[in-house]
Each structure stands twice: as C-alpha cells, then as structure tokens.
Length: 159
Image (cartoon, rainbow, N blue to C red; front, side, top):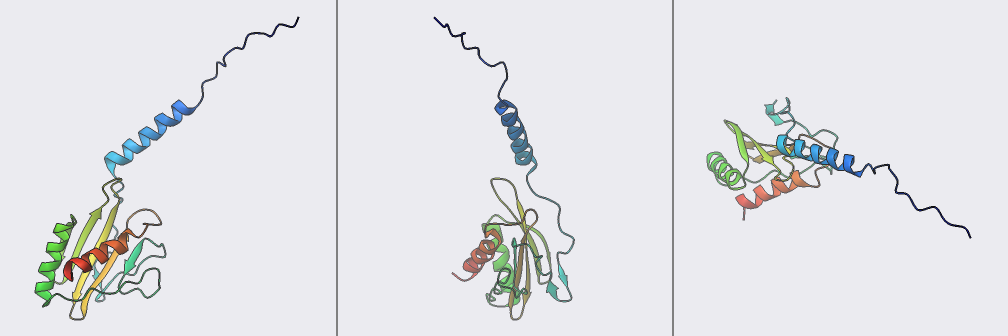
C-alpha cells in the first residue's frame, strides 16, 4: 500500500499582514495630515478676473468657456455689499473657512470630511454678478465636488 506523506503546512507567511499594515499606516498618515496640499499661487483677482481653470477636470470657473469647466456666474442678491454679506453668511453656514475678503473678492476653502481634501473657492463680486472659481488642490478628478459647491451657494443665495 502506498502511504501518503502527511500534509505539511507551508512555512511561508502570506504577505497580507504586511500589506494590511502598510495600508493602515498610509490611511492613518493621510487621515491625520489630511490631503490639504499647498495653497496655489495663482489665486486672487488679476486683470479684473479670477484665474482660469487648469486642464484637469477638478475645477469650474465662470470665466471659463469650455464645457467641462464653465459654470454661470451667480446673480447678485441686492447691492454688491448686500451680496457680499449674504455670501459670507452662506459660506459660514456651509462650513467653509473664509481665508480672506478684500473689497469685492472673497477666498474660501472647503475641506472634505473623509480625507481632508481642500478645494479653493473664490468669488469676485461684479455689478453683473458673482464670478466664481472652485478648484481642487490635489488629484485629477473631483467627482463633481467643485460644481456642487458653487451650485449649493447659488441655491443658498437664491432659494
């Protein structure tokens, strides 16, 4: 009779433990430090305009004309000063951090709750309406988050 040798367990460990540890470390690192990135240097009003969007799809702007980036300006809510007051109140209600207000310009930041991604959202209040620009600091796609920021603000000012 042929006797089969008893089955020996492999002494090699599966790499899943190391992979799990690596993933946990990365998630903790990104979770604690956030995915803020650094503030872009092209923010603000230059030549009476907000900066154009980059070629990546994670930005919308009212001065941009291409379909992927274009978004309509937000109508004023009364005078320019009344609009600025209403806009600042809406940003506060929505949990945005207002970074600066200079004359008719407002710069704010929206931070995602899960990973801490930061979107820079700018407003330039003109007599014709509120010009807007919202752009992600990191990544390529934003899954429509920047467009949603602007449309939520539009709805808050014009329910």
